[in-house]
View 1: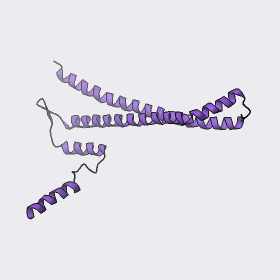
View 2: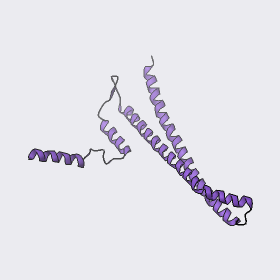
View 3: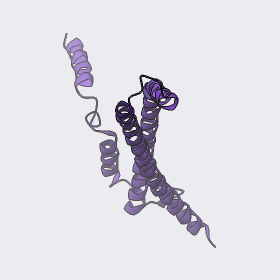
View 4: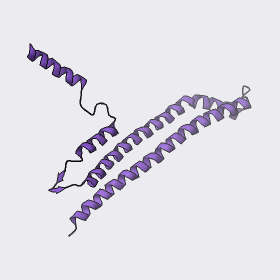
Length: 160
């Protein structure tokens, strides 16, 4: 009976406590891992890394994570533009058709108001994408700088 209860207790513990990382975001998980590694020396070819190298590696990992998230944000904003274009295309074509042919149903005030609304929506979506592009470019540059720094250190260690 006690053995069965112990097994059940262990199962309950597994369900209740999946480890210290369950309640952390991805960035917090990385920070937790870095802190847990502070007192551990990682050996690479017999050469111990110092804490600054570990910190640089951690920062590079964070930079990669930010690039991935930035790309996801850009792709999402791009999709929003495509959805908006599809949404307003028919109305925009009808507005243009009325204005360009001088149809009897043409109302200049309505045309200007509706076209302005459509253009503002498109500009807002395009500005959001441009902002995401600019952010992603900066993130890519930061990540590339970590790679270049890492490569320079490797090349510096190989000089004779």
